[in-house]
Amino acid sequence: MIGRSAFCAAASVLRQTLLLSMLGGLLVACEAENQDLQAWMALQRREAKPRVQSLAAPKKFEPVPYANAGQVDPFSSQKLSVAIHQQAGQPNSLRSPESNRPKQPLESLPLDAMSMVGSVNKAGVAFALIKVDKQLYQVRLGDYLGPNFGRVTRVTENELGLRELVQDAAGEWTERAVTMQLQERAHEKAR
Image (cartoon, rainbow, N blue to C red):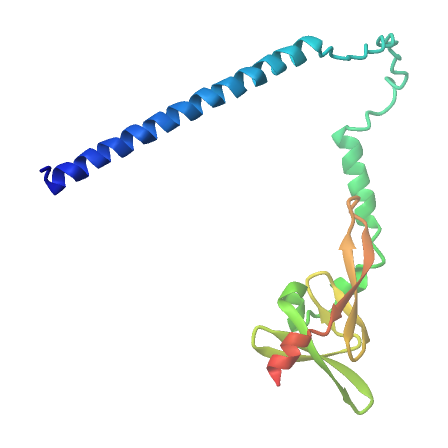
């Protein structure tokens, strides 16, 4: 009589042999499919013809002589310094009144650091409630906010309108309209 451990070992070997023979059969079947696929790919490569359109012939380059050689060089430092002196003599009408007035506390902070959390009407004058960090400020028409000379032009229940002065790429001062919307979430947390 065969012992139980010997029987288990024989059964394990039999299972492994059966599993290996099944895997071998699958590999042979896959190889046959793979050969068909390889033959089809080779046929497609032979039949495929690339279609490349020919490029147009380049146009002949005809140089143009520089006719302004006797004139002032537009990139000379002398011409630039003359333009700077002329501009310094003519103050920009938008910025000159802004630079002569005393700065208000909220002008040192960027607009991104501020949020409008409400509005109040005192004796017919509308005030916007501006929150910066954990402090609350009352801002009214004519006050200044932000680093770009932002002057308050409109205070409503839901928004604050500003007129900022910014320099464009040419160095000219231009006006830009900015609005600050009422922050509902911040308003609800303040309650």
